[in-house]
Length: 226
Image 1: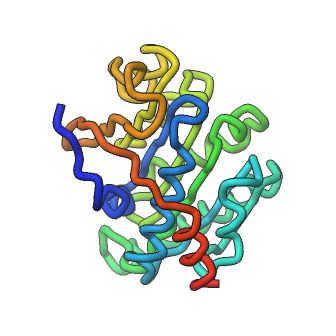
Image 2: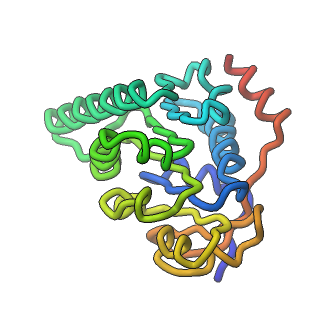
């Protein structure tokens, strides 16, 4: 299995339609999300907007007051309202595409980042159809999903959603069943406890080191934009 270069990983992920990040507790999901956000704030700041769904109220809160952040939610009701708003934005962009006779929206990219997808799926039934719509239709409207979970099982990663998340990153998993749920194959269960992942994209599958951005660099970048 080929190994993806350490640098440029996050930049590449930001150019993908949607990304699934899944693995066991402590395997590095938050580390990867922070590195993706650091890359966005450092190397891709123009015309980038973020919407943060943070059920744990810990990992994404620091980004809440950035000028890039156009929505933040931690409570279930607020999350549903925010997802509905994103779908309205998507529909408006599609209407513009139809009017202009174009296939790809030319405005800003919007990244909907969900830190713990399992919490959302367990607490409400209203999120699934909204996320499914975004996964199916977001690409042409430049609305991206970055979905992370520490519970990669069928109850959380339902086929109608996962099938549209073509870029999938499997960190260390508890067993081959979880690995298959993410990648369609075993292998993630033998990864190191943290630091490495298997990245599956439409182009193929490869190993990758999880980019780490230390807290000082994150804080400096957040303070710069704030």
